[in-house]
Length: 277
Image 1 (tube, rainbow, N blue to C red):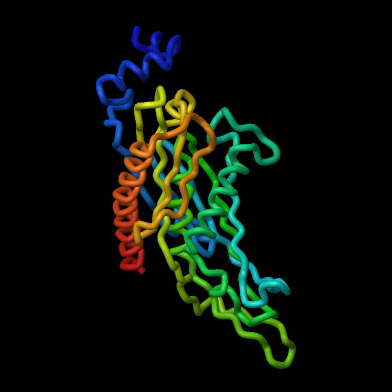
Image 2 (cartoon, rainbow, N blue to C red):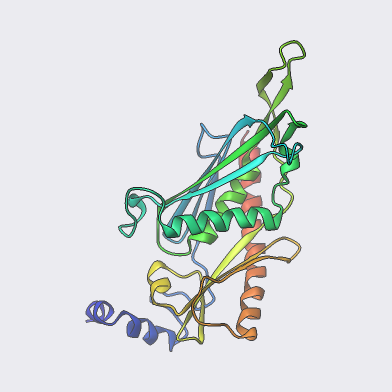
């Protein structure tokens, strides 16, 4: 009976739970799903991380390449993020060029990298005007069940902390770079952005960490990104109904708490991996 009601009237089905201050999966309105993290899981990458937020699973692999700096920024390298939503992660995505959601997610991640200064591109310069690093940050969704942006930001942060830059010298005689893969130094992470996503039902009921089904039924969607100094790096709201100042402040407050939880998780996993080496 309940399954039939859910199929025929999904919004009313969810409303029946929201009236009781809970959700169909048993969570409270302000409760995030279980989040797990594994770093260094791609042996062929220069840095990597696998994140699960509930059923949503995202992996980030970082590859390094040498390049020439631009004339406009001779002392800077590059960071190139890309989010991929392949058909294997959900039936809603199709094979072919990146869809609108994948493009929007890639742009969101690029904006967070810039607004949070998580990596300063000056750190990627090897020799001014001649040589720099390019960081290709490929984020692939393996299983999609809502709240993609939070998972992408966690995976990116953890993968950047896992990235090691090889030693590079420029041969004085030939002028060509020589890479020593045996000697690596950690990439300097200047800040730790963490995203927290929310959905609004019927313009009034606020929930955190929405599933794909909840996202589809909500009237508004919001992602708040903060750093370790509790500064706002981004408030991303792609359309939908407006939020009151009180609701927005509630989101920001919850995002600050979530930031502490995720940073503890990242630090714990990072220490565990380092102790194994």
